[in-house]
Image 1 (tube, protein in one colour):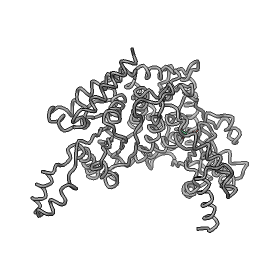
Image 2: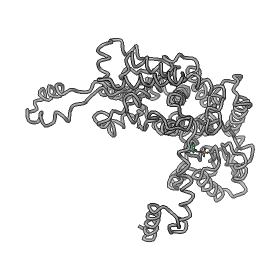
Image 3: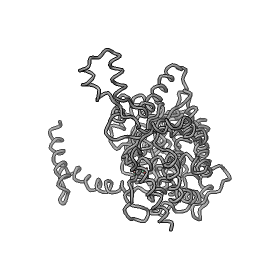
Image 4: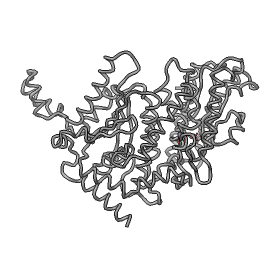
Amino acid sequence: MADATLEAAWGAVRALGRRDGAAAIRPLFAADPDRAARCTRRGGDILLDYSRTAIGEPVFAALIALARAAGVEAFRDAMARGEAVNNTEGRAALHMALRGARGTPFRAGAEDAAASVHGTLDAMRDFCASVHEGRVLGATRERFTDVLNVGIGGSDLGPAMAARALWTPHAPMRAHYLANVDAHAWEEVRARLDPARTLVLVASKTFTTQETMANAHLVRSWLADALGEARLGAHLAALSTNLTATAAFGIAPERVFGFRDWVGGRFSLWSSIGLSLALALGWDAFERLLAGARAMDEHFMRAPLDANLPVLLALIEVWHRNGLGYPSRAVLPYDERLARLPAHLQQLEMESLGKGVGRDGRPVAQDTGPVVFGEPGTNAQHSFMQLVHQGTTPVPVDFLFVANPDHGHADSHRKLLANGLAQAEALLRGRTAEEVEAEMRAAGTDGAAIARLLPHRVFPGDRPSNVLLIPRLDAHRLGQVVALYEHKVAALGALWGINPFDQWGVELGKQLAGGILPALEAGAPMPGMHPATAALVAEIERLRHTGG
Ligand code: F6P
């Protein structure tokens, strides 16, 4: 029965997507002067305006019915109860516990998750205070001025994004991030650091990730060269679930800040993986970040489906992906400080939702996660927005606007916002052939030139976007924004019937790299290698000999 209801709900969404004019947005505005207000919802301090989508009342109703039939609320509640919603790994997904208020119970199966979270937070807070107050010093008795986080994926992107967003010159320390195993990245970071004043955090949930361990060894040698093997321990700490491996690396147990396996890498910003933020921005800022995420958790848990921002973002994605067949989505923060937000969302959304089989292991019945990409506005306008305006396939956009800047250049901020608002409007309204012709005639263009250029200057319009507006970019609001997208991902997991908390698709490449490395070390293809790889190994070796 439940399956039949779900099938019917999907059928209704698909049928609406196939109607003539299903993608048209302008008629919805023409028919409803109050559309902008009617399609605006608030969660915490975030305003979501989805009026610039082709979601009218029938589509909205069908999407809400789908959310009910797919059990979005039941999945959300099971996640909050600490059930093993990550079914392929047999784990809970309890990132909400990481930012739960003291005294709020969270359990992961039999485990008291809240107790372990607050124990770690207390240890992190004490460590930050010791570093900031100069009770924990480097090997040469100097204060730490810089923190270097060595980690990749979820052990890098969230903290790197948030540090970029929130750091100011008044902050207690500078934060640096080393992720890529390409040692050019290390050379670049190293040039900014003095080993005597650098605290190194090796951030790896598993403490086995090849890239992170390789970089950690490079950094360790740098510390050993500068400070001596016996003294480098003062400069190291680890953020990990693998206490055996951190001990083997030589990190003292009191310098290991743990978290549990029910924290997924891309949801781990709020765990000890956020220690670089707490050190660089100060403990209060880190707590405000957690409190902001908590405010969004409360909204997600309590708001009805039709006013629930994460659920609405998920349903809008379903409409664009499955109703209208759009394969990608752009994220455009109109705030330079959010330059790394698209990178964080790329991992959060694509690692979570890029799945071809359902929770039951059977091929999914509909398309799943779109390609997510983005850049801060206005840079995006001078880059890929040409395709978004006039390319052959619409690309839905999430615009993120910040009402109040934290600089004194009001004119510059007005220009920034004017550009962002104009992009959203241009995508919606487009420009017809008649409008182009009238404009060209008014400019005195001759008839032949008008005929030649007119098709190039027409904008189709009816291209969808969401607008997210926050009053100001601070730790609390950033916490809300990131948690909003985390819960959107969980809601899409329920809607698409996939497990959004595993990432088996990253395993094959890791495994193959382990087999290819010996060939590169030996300088020759190995027997049994794939011929395509063998040919490139041989060519790389030839070029290495020429020194090119
Ligand atoms: O890319 C795969 C992945 O497992 C991510 O999910 C994770 O964030 C990243 O690698 C880093 O893993 P770890 O924290 O264990 O080093």
